[in-house]
Length: 246
Image (cartoon, rainbow, N blue to C red; front, side, top):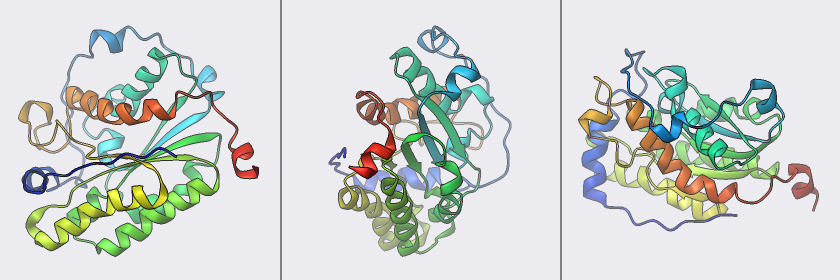
């Protein structure tokens, strides 16, 4: 499995989280338009029929993954598909983001999300757990079970780190933050240190709510994920059954 060692900057993260997580799970916001980069526009389109035959990368997340407030083709999983196509890798990226979802919600719909030809699972959950001040032990247990079930099927897992708001106290914020690198180490999975790195707290990269990325922000989020995902996709796709039976 892939692994990554990350050093966190505690004080900076807490400040970012205060801005970031006030209303991740809130209702719909009006999207803001933004042009796609020339590189994104240059990627040739792939037909739905062609993609349906590909091995899949599933992104299991909340409104940040679903692309709340954006056009459907601007959410970061769609940008990831453009990266995959540009690199001529044979994968379909599936957006399994549900607005307002918690880690418990992601766990409940996991089996449905990874039922068909899934080779890589990106777990981008926890923002709403932190927003609601849900117990850190529950976050850990839910994410752990998601990882365990996916690995039992021979699926490569990538875990995206998230932050809790500071209003629940420094102890909660610190323990919440530690869940992600701890689980990555325990299960030997790759870690994206902070899903919104380079986007959170930057006004022009966020919508009017100050929380959900614009199209430009979503491309940066895609880059954060791609930096880790591309290593998992370098090898030719393997049949998950062959990994579980070996």
